[in-house]
Length: 307
Image (cartoon, rainbow, N blue to C red; front, side, top):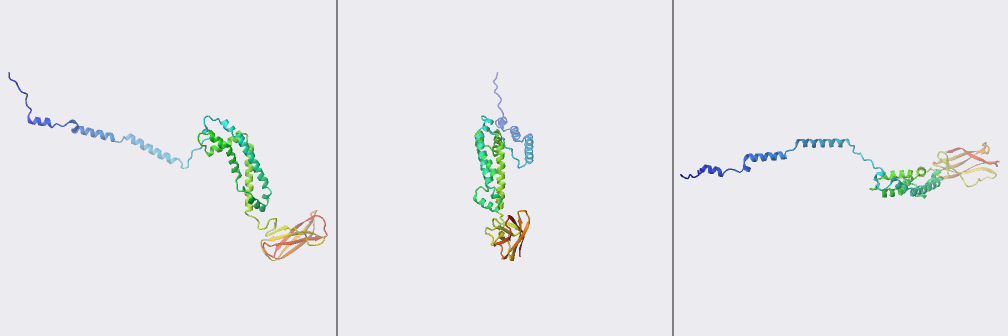
């Protein structure tokens, strides 16, 4: 028996065995990896469509919302600490609020009384406006400000966040009602409004004073009279002496005529007087009198002309 040796591979077979590529370098593997990479980074068509719809909806919603839209402010009770009772916080303001309304009512009433007389005369209005420092003060706003001085601190202490201006105002209105002070508060507000209106009229009158001096009265256009303090320069006569002023010159003369009326309203006599070469703004005296009358009566100007 002979021993057989295993066949030796040929040189060509040895060459092929040695040069065979590993799998990760083979073409089919590289192609597979490439496809996997492309699939990983490729966009999801459903996701792209969803983003597009989201952007479109957002754009439409934005275009439908007005640029001036503002959210309504919360009621003051929604801002309270959960441990704070609404009834208690309202009740705690009553004493101070009552003091404010009472003191402001007294002040406003005092100022209304003080302006009663000056408001009837433009010159007195002008003089009074100069004397006081509250003529241009809006009392309606001031009164509400004093009321809020009593209620704002209480609401601030009971709230979680700093209340808004609307919440402060709402709380004040509810506190006034809850404390039973609504009639007194409304009366105060009306008085403050009346005072503001009066002061506005006085300020307007003071800035548009008449052309003639104080105490004169314009009986005829451009000609004003005032009863003089001096007495008549005649013996056993009865009548009146006027100071007169005009807003234009009378180059020739100023003529004044009047009737005398007795206590029964009957005209029993008349009189006249003249002033020569009378200048605008100049003050002169005219005397109107009658004789033989000792009763009570009045003088009625009937004719005044500037020539």
